[in-house]
Amino acid sequence: MDFSQEEENNNVSLTKFESMLKTNNVLFFDSSEFENIIHHYLNQGKVALAKKAIKLGLQQHPSSVSLKLFKVEIFVFENELGKANSLLNELYILEPSNEEIYIQKANIFSKENKHEEAIDVLKRALSLAEDTADLYSLIGMEYLFLDQFDKARDSFMECLDSNPEDYASLYNIIYCFDFLDKNSEAIEYLNTYLDKNPYCEVAWHQLGRQYYELKDYEKALNAYDFAIISDDTFVGAYIEKGKVLEKLNLYNEAIENYSITLSLEDPTSFALLRIASCHEKLGNDDLALHYYYKTVHEDPLLDKGWIAITKFCCKQENYEKALHYINKAINIDGENVIYWNYYAKINHKLNFLEEAERGYKQVLELEHYELESWLIRSDLLSELGEVESAALNLIQAQDFFPENAEIEFRLAGLYFQLLETEKATYHFRNAMRFDAEHIIILEELFPEIYKSTAVKNLLKKKQ
Image (cartoon, rainbow, N blue to C red; front, top):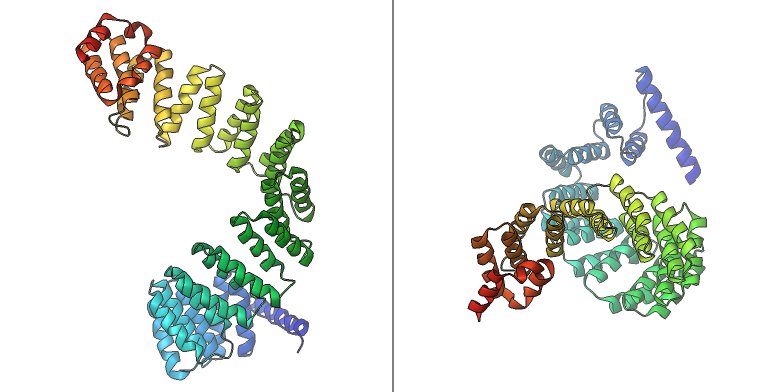
């Protein structure tokens, strides 16, 4: 039976089965038909229909081990591991050499985080299986769970030896090399693989990535060129080649490669963002802004897009437009601390002090506790005449930055302003003890207090 005929038969079986469900007329299917129906529904994520097919299948074929194994799979999926184990034990007595029983047993061990036991069971299955590629893949995944990357890599290599077109295993092998920081070994392995499979675009792509990590950009370019020769619709190769060309300051060539991806599939925000960045570096400001705008239009949730367009406007000192874009970003995602940071800084540049203070307050409420945010917010509150709030803000900052002279000198100045001399003196002495050179803060922010008799007397006593 050829593939198209087999597929046609499967479709007939599915249509017949679904018709039976609608009419409640019980029709007969052989066990292999039920297996194909169940497999189809599980692949589609239609678990309820799969369960119906299993139930009807076992009613018509009560001794079918294959159908009972599907039942085990459902038990595991629904986390009913006890029922799954009981049924597997029954099936093992009936067919102790059925590799699928071992695979499901290993699956249960894996769900229970017993990965060593899962590996032992899968290794026992290896002696029973004619095709071992899938088993080695499962063993490799269990080793990944255990962070045993050398063993995982070796297992995936066994898969690839059995099936050179198993690209999932190839990706996993390179993932293991990457995790182990073995770029040179990865390059050696990929070159050996490519000697036997010279037109594998995935391998050329991965080889380019390894050279890129080693900053060998010329070899990376060659690898991506071969990936494109192998498959001239391979979007990933054009993207990665564009990144290398950017590193080599070949921005026009980078734009050309990113642009090709836009014609091969729906535009991606990443490609649009990189095109915009290249135009900016080339001084094509209008085109840069055009592509930055297309980036945020394509993916409004991409924070890198909003940040890039905001930074671009700030670089041009067009703070009003920068504020316009960062406000749009905040309206989309009001919990993004980076947006609020830009909002605060841009408003500060525009001398919108209340809005700037609100921005820094939001940054801190989002638990982004940088010293600069505490200090600037305090200075803004002080400038707005909210001296007590400025002091309270710095007291809170002390929980994160104890024994900090920048905080202490500010507190001294604020408390002198509030005529709370005892507190002011306490913080002044602390500040001098932590770092006396920061007294310039008092001189710049509180010049009148710096020149006051009280501060002069404190400085004399310090001498």
